[in-house]
Each structure stands twice: as structure tokens, then as C-alpha cells.
Length: 361
Image (cartoon, rainbow, N blue to C red; front, side, top):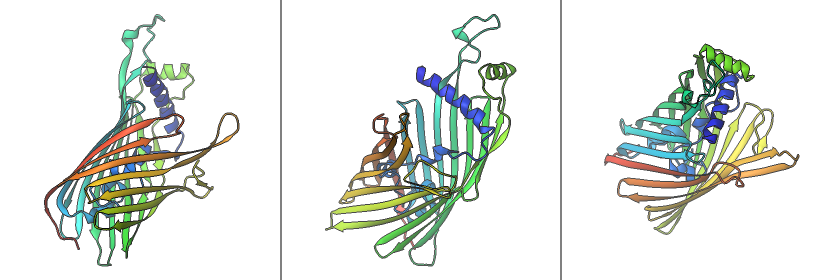
């Protein structure tokens, strides 16, 4: 209960913030968590090597590498001791030998948040029966298209995304944005670029607050939010990868990515007024293309604590995966923040190839 009350305070603060911060650094951050246990086990170092249905999220160009007629993927994970639920589903279909279409769905939500704005009745009495609950939920639907070009080794793709964010019945937003990406194979190397929110994503917020709720906001020192537009600025993801084969049974995939943001200084490894860069690296060891071990490190943070000391943290992830005929089962064990806090999460995902393989240009 205490944790969910804390989330209520956070939600109220966020509602007030949306009215005044037109281009916040962390807008639509639920779309930065990542999807698929394979990618999360490699610390999100995946924009280059992604070659399945999850490419609709990571880099739509990777969809062009899908060899089957259809591919379906599902994922579930929980954060903050199970308070927040994060789910993903995707389906891709090959249109012809050079193009693929995909749909992806993402939900991040906190349910059962206590609404205590009516806790005290008109006579000043505390009545716990007046407590209701609500959900703070973020949804995203991505429609992606990828194509293999005539230039050898080059694939391109784009995703149009519709965003719906809701805070109970009293706040909501609709948003729209476009992502675009490319992958290029050169000899044994792979390179990639992914531009998220390339057109700048806009969320239009609207509020439906009762008079009683407005009075509570005023009494507690919170600003009453008004309808507004929230902007998500573009982000550029760059990557390089190479796969090493040790005989016919053992392989090692190495990928390095860097995420560049242009919304001012962030607490990342490289931070300037013009651009902030967050690097991360992932590894995947495979045995007979059936069993996989994964590890990665990223999310380097540098900040000053209450004593004035500069603190450096990073996020380690590990994972495993197995392939059983056309079924892929993956698991990732992630640390979502400072190691001293030990906020660990378990991520499970499932992927299935359906129907015959297609010849890819």
C-alpha cells in the first residue's frame, strides 16, 4: 500500500509537470525500456544484430532479415517488486522476397493506485471507504515496414507509432511519431543507425478534474494542470556488431551501441550541452545455434550524492535462451538501477516462426 501511495504522489507530480514542461528529457520513457529478453540480456545492444519481429521496436530495418512467412513474439516483465507491469506483443509477415510488414504493441502500467482525494468527507471525517483506485497506463502501437535495397547488404525500415497514455479518468494523452532505421553488412561486420522520434513526437494532454479534486490540488500546493502538448525530441542510436565462429558449434556475437540525445546534459558517460552519449555493450555466446548465453553492461550514470561526492553506477544484465525447432524461449535477469539498491527484474519472452521459409534478396 505504501508503495502504491508513493506512486500516487509521483503521478500527481507528473500531471502538474506536463502542463509546463514542453520538451522534458524523459518524455515517453516507457518506449526506452526495450522489448525481448534477448535484447535485454545484452543490455539493449541490439539495433545492429536484430533480425526478428522485435525489430519493429529496435530497428525496423532488421525486419527484412526474417526468413519465415510469419513470426510472432510475446514478452512479460515486472518492475518495482511487481508494482509495474510491462508487456509486449508483435507479429511480422513477409510481403515478398524483399519486404516485411510488422505490428508491435507495448503496455506499461501501474494498476490499483489508491485515489485518496476523497478520503475526508464534507464534515472533516476520515472515511477509508471513500478511497478508490485507478491505473496509470502507457500504450504504444507500432506499424513497421522494412525493405532490402538493391545495394548489397543494405536494409532500411520505418515505424509509425501511435501512443496513448492514461492516468485514471482524469488525465490522458494521444501521441504520434515516426522512427526510421538502416542496417548495412560489410564483409564480417554489421553496422546500424536508428533514429527514434525522427519527426519529433507530440503528445496532446487533456485533463478532466472534478471540482473536489481541484480543491485538493490547491490545498496540497499542487498546480492545477491545463491541456497542453508534450514533445519528445529525436534520439539517434548507432551500432556495430560482429559474429565470431569457433568451429561449427560455438559462436560469439559482440555488439556495441551508443545512444545520442540532443535535449541537454544527461547524467551519462559523455555529457555536453549539445549532445549526451550513453554507450552499452552486449555479448551472446551460442552453441550449435540451439543454446545461448548473454551478458551486457550499460546505463552508465554519474551524479552527485547528498554528501557532494560524485557517484558512478552502471547496469549489468545477463540472460539465456534456447531454440526448440521453430520456438525460441528467452530469459533475462536485469538490474534497473544502482547495484546497491538491487532492484532486479525477471524478463521472459517467447518467439515462434510460422510457415515455410522464404528466400531473402
